[in-house]
Length: 444
Image (tube, rainbow, N blue to C red; front, side):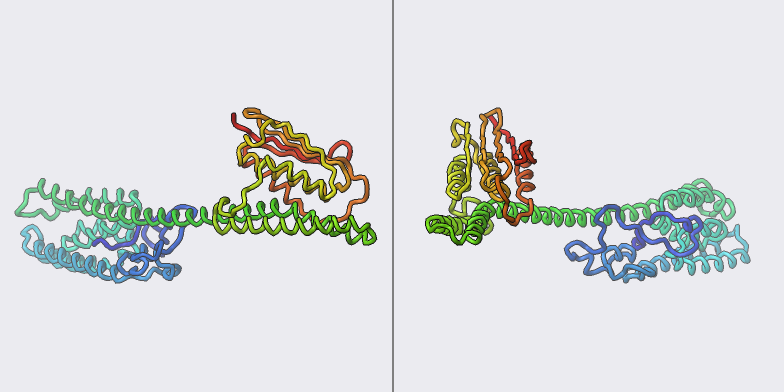
């Protein structure tokens, strides 16, 4: 008699046991699914489970009335057969009891037969059937098996408050039953103790089955949550990887492509420029294109290899700041560098790389939005004090050609500085120019 429905949360119609069955409550949590995680044996063989448990593992069973599984039919037939066998034993005892008249013995057997037939209603009305069996068990020994089945079903189907009230009533009427039809071969006190023990055993068995069902659904819910959390972590990791790729591509290529755009624009708007300037601009375009391709290969190598060292080209750090300023000057920018860091090579690689990217983005923005202006790059700091970097430029001296840009570079820089434990600020200066300032922690 172990196959019945899983525990349900009480509903208004459960107080009387009438009306449609309450729907089983799915496990609590944000990731409540209705399939066995990984397509395990429970999902492949739902007929081995009670119907309401199987519907939690098989999405095709959701909605409408719960269809009985093969296990349900076997269990229902076993419960009916057990009620009939126990009823036959009770009917035989009533027929041979000298304290019971023949007419009442026949009534006992008829009432017991009706109670056994009512066992097939135990899934639909567990509360009502168990409640009705309390007076029936007092009036009929033949209905004893049906009463035990109804009480067991109640303990499995419904919360403890129903079991407490109806089970308590079943135990309370045991002395009355033994007094109305005393057993000639058993003392009155022992008969009461035996009846109370039997009723408590049935209730305990039902509650044990209920707890096992709850444990099964709880373990399944944990497995579903673990899978959903793993999928969420994988999705977040992919999103972070995409953001890192986008930031790296911007930092690596924006500087080079801006040089190409500026010099190509100069050639377009000044076709009558001296030959020396045209040759110099063409050389810068060629060199910047070559460097952009090298940087692109570097990023692709990092993505393929999953390791920065696999690219074969080291990442720039603060020691490469002089080279960056020299490239900008070769491109026609006016840059003043004030580097007061005593030993740039002593700056940690991650810190130096972040500072380099900030300076690179600042020079790129100055080249796009303030061509011809003098750009000042200042770097100061020491271990324990932090590394401070600023890129400033006044208002542009002339008209500014339109250069495509989306402002994503400053967003990426702010994120870089935040991840490094520092801060970044930017905005217009008092002279109409622009300032970019950053502070990064430098451990002693």
